[in-house]
Every structure is written in structure tokens, then in C-alpha cells.
Length: 449
Ligand code: NGQ
Ligand code: ZN
Image (cartoon, rainbow, N blue to C red):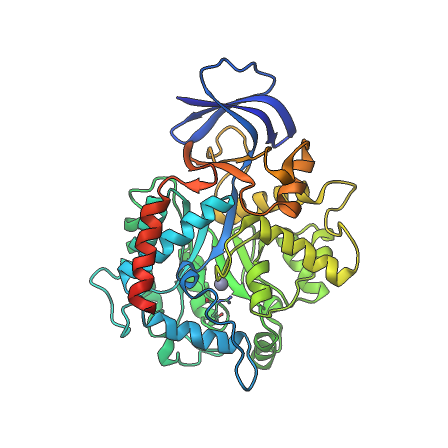
């Protein structure tokens, strides 16, 4: 058994002092406050639970910063998607794994301890199957394993280019399955995760554009865990859904599927008040990806209404254009402040925005990723140690430390990160940073030089 001792820790019941945390086989087996440090176990400063990143497409990390040039006829989500599709031609399994490992290392360094990988790049460059049809899922698992990041693998079903079962376009050839083929992929994913006992397997119908109602139903029936779907991210998608069905995407989904706490609705940017209420009442998690949504010009989610209705949310790094857990929460709050022209607009009472955002997002992500949240018995021993010596963190205690981390600090405010009781980040750097970064650099040399 391993134990650590924290000068302060944010427990499910609030801040506590002198907390001893016992860990066995990666999980917390006991938490006791007001315990004297015995001088034997590792002594930490301020400790909070790790945050889950509920939505990622790891490979997109390698094209970050390469799509920030506008076209003559304007630029949009859809023209960005064209560039992203072209980038796929360069990704073989080794390159893909090197990029994913870099992205996962950066996630850990920023405070994310588990990722929901919304994984859709399944087939070879020409669309043919790899010898192992789950080859790329094996690579996702390997990248998670080599960095130590927790993995909730969400293999994506993708069969159509638009509502109404439209045929896929050639650029989507690496994503495609029929339902039977997808069942095979799911089996392959199970194999790929065999050596990772705490990995979670779910399913992800890509979007209502990419699945027919019948396919969606079949996927829900075969789901071994969480169900994630992109929904209502762009107004063009909402208009197309109305033209197809007479209903808005979220409205259609609730009318045609049994959406409950197993579900994660990614983006859900464009929703009307009735849809806000449906989502909140269902117990589903809304997966907000503030940095990517800003980068792609998606729009602003009606967060305050959703929170007031009792909705649950978490954050994801999605396109990985920038990987930063604190920045996702900061931008989530700031987008709402800009729109609502007020301060501290989300937390419902007279409480710290940082504490509220952090706890809500930690709980929402854990639900969406199929794991237990918080520093309680039975939860994974995923810990972050905040650096109280950092200039932005000095002479602060309790909630003010979280507020200062999220709103006032830049890099370096995290000193250590533990996953399943193993320290993976020391002094802000991943323990295997050099090797992972060198392999990433070599991979980029192959595909971009
Ligand atoms: C994706 N990304 O699957 O990577 C999508 C773009 C689509 C975001 N939605 C493709 N942010 O939605 O068709
Ligand atoms: Zn996405």
C-alpha cells in the first residue's frame, strides 16, 4: 500500500487539512483528515482530484496552428473540416500513436488525468481495413498506456455524410463501418483494452449526420458503457436537421432515443429553452469544449439557463488546438461573462467560481467517462498538486487557490500529477517527456517537413 499526506485537500465534503490518503492497486482505500504527518510518506501541499477531459480527437493536435489562415471566400467550421480531412492522408499508425502520446502527455501536464477519446480514424489511407481492424484503437490504448493517462475509449460509428443516410464522401473513407462491421470493431477494442484494467469502453455515434435512426438504435443496444455524440454544434447542422425531420437535433434525439445519464452530448451549442430543459432533466452530461468551440466559431452555449435548470457538464479539449485544463474552464466562464455582461455568472450562489467550475466539471466528466469522481474511497487515486509557491498562488488558501489557478496563473501552477497513485508529472513536467517529445518531433518531420 502507498500513502500520501496533503497539507490541504479538496474532498467531496469540502477542504480539509492534514489529509492522509491511502492507495491500493491505484484506488483510494482511505481518506483521513487532521492526521499528523508521520515523516514516512510523501508530503504534498494543496491537493485536488484530477480532472477528466471528456472529448478529444488526439490526432488533431498535430495540425494545431496550421489552419489559422482565412480563405478568399471566407472561412468556417466546414472549410476547417476540409483541411482536417486532407491532413488525415498523412497519418499512419506509428505517426498517429506518436501524436496521441504527445497530446496525452500535454493533457497530464495541464491537469487532465483521463481522456474520452472520440476515436474515428479507423482504416488505412486508402480506406482498406488494417490486418487488425482495431489497429488504430490499439494505438490509442498504447499512447494512453505509455503516458499513464486514464482512457475511456469511444469508438466512433460513422456511415453517412449528412442527414437522411446520405452516402459518405471519399474523404470520409477512413471512418466507415456498417453496424455489423462496427460490432467487430467493438470486439477489437475490447481486446485492445485487455491490458488496461481501468480503461472504460463506450460507443460514439459520430453525429446525427453520420448515422441513420436505425443505426443509432443498434449502437445504443450494443453500448458497453457511455454513449457520446456530437450534436447541434453548428447552425447549418441545426437547419439541415429541421429540413430533414422537422425537428432540431437535440429535440429529435430526445424524441427518438432514451437519453439518460449514460449519455454525453458533445457541444449542444444551439439549443432552445425546451431543449435545455430536456437535457437537464435527463441527467445526461453536456460536453463543452470552449477552446475548440471558440476556434471553430461554433457559437455560445446557453450555460446559465442550463445550470439553473440543474444541468450537468464537463469539458473536453476536442481538436486539441491548445491543451490546457484551466484554460477550458476559464474560457467557459469568460464566454458567458462576455455574453451576459456580468461577473461570476455561472455559480448559483455566493461561492467561488473556480471551486464551482472545478467541482462541477470534475463530476460531469467522471460521469461521462464512466468512473467515480472526487477524492473518496473507491475512486481512482488521480491527484493534482497545486504549486503554492507560484507567483499567482502565494498567500492563498482554499477556494482562492482554485480561483487563482483557473483565472490568474499560466503554466507552471501545477506541480505534480498522479494517476492511479503513480506520479506522472513532477515539477510540471511529465516523467517521460523527453522520449515522447522526441518521437513526436520525428513524426512531424515525416509528415510536415
Ligand atoms: C470531428 N470535430 O469529428 O473531428 C468534428 C468535425 C464533423 C468537431 N465537431 C467533423 N469539432 O463534425 O463532421
Ligand atoms: Zn469532436
